[in-house]
Image (cartoon, rainbow, N blue to C red; front, side, top):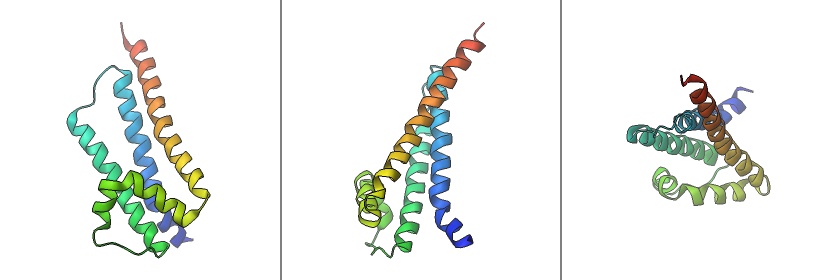
Length: 125
């Protein structure tokens, strides 16, 4: 049981990070404020770090052969490489995984925007 939990930990933490980061970004846009450059940098680095952690952990579980610098490859070509990897290792289930990832990404973002707009309207005198 603990092994399955440890195998799922990178994906779970990546999903939690994406949810929190997108709600926070959506809240900023809901209050009609632009996110700072440093928050955008932390956001991008956090997503790529979590994606690399998940990718390396998952590729070890599926005994995927590594290239020399897998992290750099995922960082620069991750949006192409990760879906290809998912289809190679999981087949048709990759559609479900990608759909859930995109749904989480945009759902959290929209939730933050709507919440920020409602809070902005309620807090104005």
